[in-house]
Image (cartoon, rainbow over all chains, first blue to last red; front, side, top):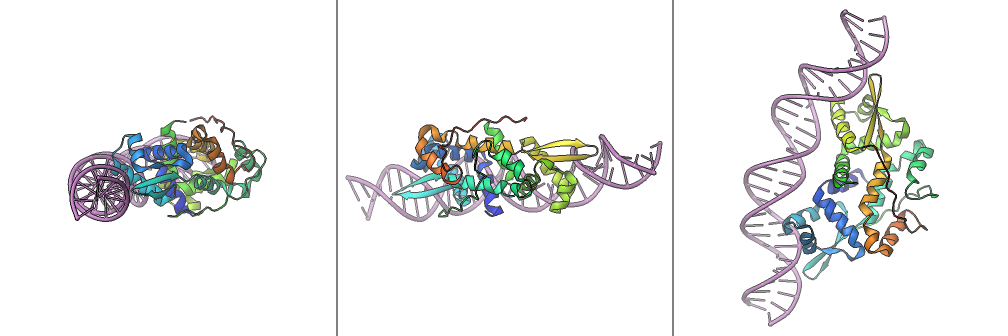
Length: 123
Length: 123
DNA sequence: TCAACTATACAAGAATTGTTGAAATATACA
DNA sequence: TGTATATTTCAACAATTCTTGTATAGTTGA
């Protein structure tokens, strides 16, 4: 993962509105939501939501699929995991035992974190 | 985790400089680094690094310990894992099977993703 | 084709953030 | 005590971001 990708993703989630959008989409999972639904659910002006969705899409945090006149958005969960790997990938280089201790705590009890796969998104 | 905590952490990592600082500290693990070392390593003015470290500390992303006239900073990795849990905690509520599918893809090949543990940090 | 609907694009103002230089605080050591 | 070092704080300017209103593009169905 490139540094710019990481900062874009983090910037996307640094806004309360975008964080709400992302968590809403995560909650919906594969079903996703159309733009209007998101705006209604969060009680925000559609153009404002569209503004934020554009940035999130550009960052790869969400993907969009056209459905007639609707645009359906989905959360890109694999990217999030890829991001975590990026943040901690060099940790194990210097002190594997410390990192393993911390990281296996909450996710992979026995696995020593394989390098996460690069996942393609249409952006 | 509260929403504000999450947005503060993400905002902390949305800057290239702060991301560099964080990854540097992750790389160092428990050893950490003093402020001057960080500034030298990244070739940045000390007051600028101090500015960014202040925000990161406030967000809980890094912790600081005084060592004589030095201040040693450490990355707070458990908070990062707590953050991931926050992002995905409601995913499994609605559609457990979808989330498991997505998440096990890149992290826990055989585990069906137990609800991620809430990790306490001093914030 | 026309009208209604969904969504995005654009522009302007307010608000926030980032960087730099100078000054201040605190510790270490002779 | 006095000086050097490490780090932070403060002020000011440049740059960016957020929100809102208006306009535009594309889709649907009669």
